[in-house]
Every structure is written in structure tokens, then in C-alpha cells.
Length: 85
Picture 1 (cartoon, one colour):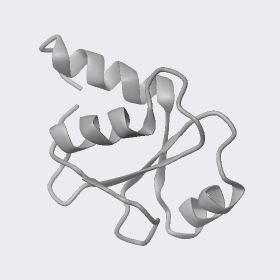
Picture 2 (cartoon, helix red, strand yellow; picture 1 turned 135 degrees about the vertical axis):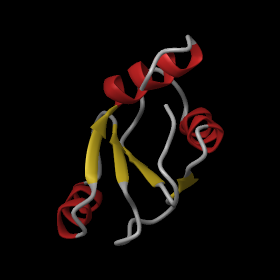
Picture 3 (cartoon, rainbow, N blue to C red; picture 1 turned 45 degrees about the horizontal axis):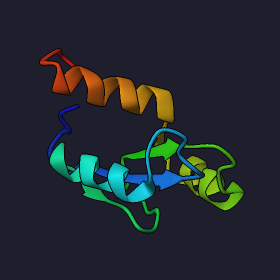
Picture 4 (cartoon, rainbow, N blue to C red; picture 1 turned 120 degrees about the horizontal axis):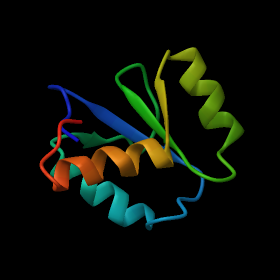
């Protein structure tokens, strides 16, 4: 997964396939910043199990693209295997 310039990604909910710290490490390895709080500058929100209703409302307010955990992990896997993501 290669992120566009100035990409900023947040996480809400519990990830089932990795810890939040592992996901943050992958976000940084992809060249993105991690959003500890959502803002209009956040470009994407990874949604895990039992996401925060507040985070989802902010994502809608700020027009943040939602990416579910499976999509995120698929893109990371493709990147590691040399595929396009």
C-alpha cells in the first residue's frame, strides 16, 4: 500500500488481525502519517470491530474515506508481495 503525499490515516475500533501499534507501524512504513485525532486533514479511517460512533460521525463530517480492516490488510499484503495496491 503506497500512500499519496500528505496522507493521514486514523483507526477506530478493535483490529482483529493485528494490534493498533502494528497497524500504525504499517501506516508509517507505507509513507503515511497516523491521525491520533480525526480532522479535515485526515484522508482515511481504518474501521475495525466495534468502531467509535464519535469517530464515524467525525469521518462523515470531515468527508474521510472509510477503509475496513480487510481492505487495509489486503492492500498491505499486495504491497509486501510486490503487487499494485
